Amino acid sequence: MKTVWITAISLALTAPLFAQVATYQLVKKTTIGGEGGWDYLMADTEGGRLYVSHGTQVEVLDLKSHEKVGVITPTPGIHGITVVPGTNVGYTTNGRPNTATMFDRTTFKAIKEIPTGKKPDAIMYDAFSKRVFIFNNEGNSATVVEAATGNVAGTVELGGAPEAAVSDDHGLIFVNLEDKNEVAVFDAKSLVVKHHWKLGTGEEPTGLAFDKAHHQLFSTCNKVMVVLDSRTGKVLAQVPTGSGTDGAVFDPSTGSAISSNGEGTLTVVKEVKPGQFEAVQTVTTQRGARTITIDPKTNHIFLTTAEYGAVPAATTENPRPRATVKPGTFLVLEYTAR
Image (spheres, rainbow, N blue to C red):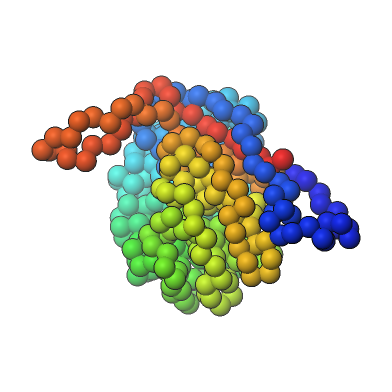
């Protein structure tokens, strides 16, 4: 993290030069190994853990060293992970059995299985309501759980397929609706949906980041990041990103929203002048690194991916084959601003 002193000289800098003060660089790359695909990962500052979805389990790593300290299993069809600060519990979403697993953060053992809607995917803890929100991608809904007990408190009918979500910490939850090209807004306590905001030309929104201080939402769509005013839903900007855009985080230390792109890049977006948003850096990562998390204490950014083999020849049964993942190459990438 860098401190920028505002002086007469610095004020004379152009916006693009000012935006380049902090650049993101790779600081650690660790091979975890194993087989299977991956989705969300989550940095737990309080517990010093990095929770990583992988195949049918969650790899639990030391946040600093990346050393493997445990496994949460079985979590078939694992997608998302969250923890509840101040308690010893966390939750996963399991897409195949349509459940969430409440687990012990010390032993990593399952405590409780919770039925959800169809294909639970993204998940988040909201400190304002002290609830966990489980977003059911094919169920067009959110299953709401009392965080301390794992008891289901209700369901939010969202009217579309939810992806990532964020909280304003004052009672509102914002969530992307992938198939509607919208952000839905609902009350964390009453569970009433208040708004459906269109994302301009943005399509298939997945990742969602939030600059709470400036009331700005950053929704990562297909090759574009759409910036919204979180108070009105007004589209403020649409900034091109790399291809295969999926996840998003906001780094308050640099004032940047960052998208992780499956092509193997990060797109760093910043408000360089009032109302003017630009991509100020493209960071080369690694192919397949499409999901992202940020440690809110250090502002270090983490991604997961693996190495890919050759694309097999097309067949009648599989006319558009994909490259296979090489076994044993699953890894974590860690970046920070310098």
